Length: 190
Image (cartoon, rainbow, N blue to C red):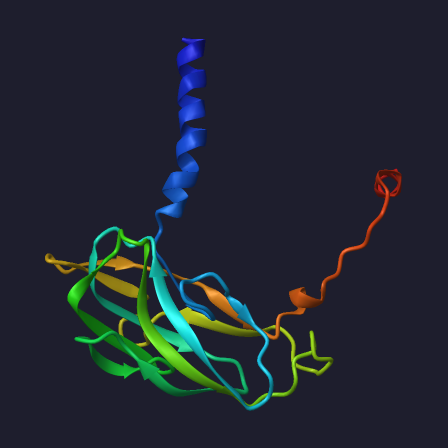
């Protein structure tokens, strides 16, 4: 009996990360394919941001979300995949349909739209020595539906995305590391 309980606990421990990673997420990335959720722009720099959906376990035929932007970041234009229809815009809430539906399994992420930005804020504190630091852009619920939603083809079943946030002028870029001995580290806890 005790062995069965231990096996069940081990199975739960092993399967929990897989279950948690199965939640579909949507984020504003600053590279393609999606890796970087942070960027340090120069004043009056134009650059692209990419809204990707990940962990989508179906053929995605629609998405609905809004992007909140920090002061100093302006959307100049946005692009959606060919064959898509839109209603609204990313800064006030956008609904996008995709045809043909996008494969959510291969390669594991989908480009939902591209945003062209102009940064009119002050110089980033790090690495440039300015005053701007940790400016947050978020993927939030669409104001009309109240959700960050996706739709699966062909049944049009709705599901919720989890919105991520991105950081412009991240202070984490300035965090340095210091070399120290193990004895000095242990002395911190005495």
